[in-house]
Length: 157
Image (cartoon, rainbow, N blue to C red):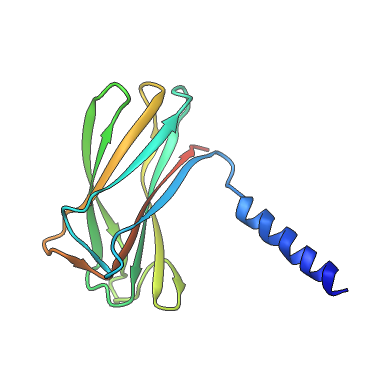
């Protein structure tokens, strides 16, 4: 009986870990610092393989932060470099606290995970590997209570 229960739990856990939303082509999260801070000079890079330039995509940034994060937003600069070397730079403001001061996102004890769709129906001009560099552009340095930044790319529905 215990063996069947253990096998069922392992099977379920393996299935959940292997699940990927339909249309998702990329997801990666990168730790910022074990000291719960993000320095402006500490950019994080993500390499996204694009095999279909005829489809439309949604870009989402994820931000993990700890209770104590003092701002309502985190402002980030995202530099996209195409496989051919063309660069484009965009700044985004990710809202992480309500006007009331409540944190936004999925809570886990004192850690919050938030996802922010920053671009919808994006068309990549060519196939190959796109590089994304993400840095914070907040007025303070370091940015305290910041834990991870992530990039998610899904096919648009």
